[in-house]
Image (tube, rainbow, N blue to C red; front, side, top):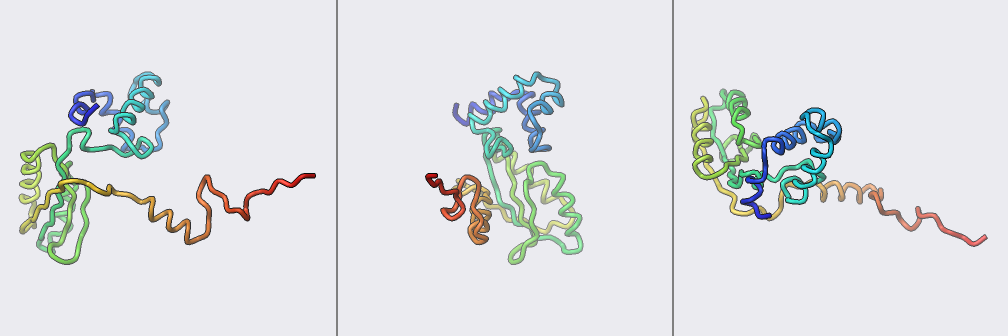
Length: 182
């Protein structure tokens, strides 16, 4: 299945499943099927299908936005009137395409990661941002390709190594039981 086919294969039930997984990453298949009013086997087979196709990954809780039609990623730096900063952030929270907002140092005051279905959709989101009271100007940079997606595993691995604790599935030679003939 290629990326263009992914969105075409998602029906309203698939989208509701994705939404529930975002809202409650620990939801069990039985709870999921009950919440959505679908059979347990239906929920399980759809989650498995989305995992196989790559729409869901990282244990089935992270969604590939490109696979559901949001394949334009932009990084927007926003300059704001400082007394309006809280209002700007509150307004950004209401724009669905805004995934992240960070107050920054350097050029600009706020940095956002924004996704869109195409350049027209991006332009509409950018216009919404520019209409927010307190926004002076924006600068937008498009992502052409993601070489390293958001990740935390290397940091946690480093912490595990620095504490001398073995991660699951590994045991140090000193801690492993030794079998001795009796």
